[in-house]
Image 1 (cartoon, rainbow, N blue to C red):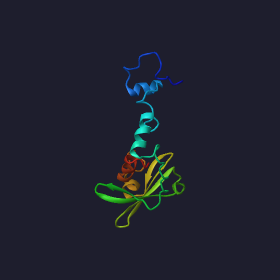
Image 2: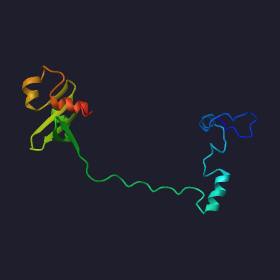
Image 3: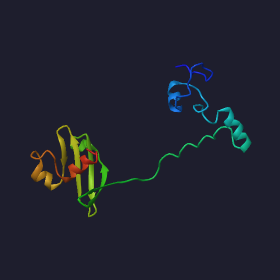
Image 4: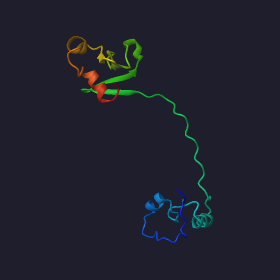
Length: 142
């Protein structure tokens, strides 16, 4: 779309700056303030640089991060593990503060967990799963 100059004979005075910008109409309100002639003179008078100085590139992310999952008031540390051990697509190890661990995984047949509730009461019976599976699904992990 070609930009329309303000010298255009049509009346654009009723347009908002946003509408003018969408239509490609160049007015003092739609020109970047640092490039508008009146802004350049104002910045010179104030002793400011004519154009903003470029920002430094942010430093690459570093450090450690961790994910905690709270289930019924019990905090679990969440770590990703290799899903191939379970024949799965995704797998995570949930570790309680006392050291007990439960592995939750997702495979083509659904979700699975290594906790006793899943193993003895729900596997193949309850499609919603144990509390670990429900929490992992609710958080988008599985």
